[in-house]
Amino acid sequence: MKRPFGQHFLFDPNILKKIIACGAVTQEDTVVEIGPGLGTLTKFLSFYAKRIIAIEIDKRLIAKLEGILSPCSNVELIQADAMKFPYDTIDGKFKVVANIPYYITTPLLFRLLEFKEKITGMTLLMQKEVAKRITASHGSKDYGVLSISAQFYTRPELKFMVSRKAFVPPPEVDSAVVHFNVSPSPLYRTCNEMLFFDIVKTAFAQRRKIISNSLKKFESIGTALSDSGIDPGLRPEKLSIEDFVRLTNALK
Ligand code: SAM
Image (cartoon, rainbow, N blue to C red):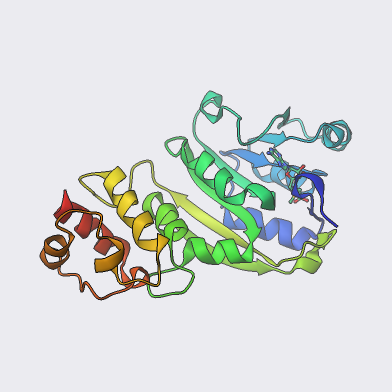
């Protein structure tokens, strides 16, 4: 059965504590939790962190959460859409720890990365397939635009898997926890970030084609490939992020 707002709740205290440990949450930390649901992770977070800002979209859950979280004086409950919340209004830097709703995993990740100067780390429980794509290295079938976009600004690490059976009600897929070390500036130096992402997206739009064919729209691509020492007969998944950076800089 489909749930509104991707509502699959976690109650296992061992898994909840393990998620918080992956985020290395301390008493110094302000933590943003997206989708507190029935407040199980929120209650644990309130023991470990200084301040928790819990953003929940569902008005019906807010009414329940007000009761559940009333003993937790360091939790601020906000009824809002996490896709629209103005994270820059939060005082100081913060961490994000959340069991995120499946239906917005990728857009939510990119929305949060818009505030990367404010975020020191993110620990997100998400569907396993997306976690594998985010953390994939070149040469893997999971490697693509999502891996490169996430790894351009963060160092994502797949921490552990969570079976679908751990959730109430169980979703149709298994999950995984990914911890992201977030960098305020790109981890790679390109002369032109827009051109870099244009090249990456164009190459992966036809991932079965060799790059000398899929990247034809870029003038002098042949020279740029040879100047950057990249075999024009490769398919895009064989190129590391550094390769795409060198190619961008050679094309500029
Ligand atoms: N944290 C709880 C847990 O671990 O049991 C619930 C996790 S559940 C997978 C996702 C939660 O995100 C739900 O409570 C859902 O209502 C909420 N949610 C869905 N879309 C949201 C959005 N756009 N903004 C804020 N919360 C959202």
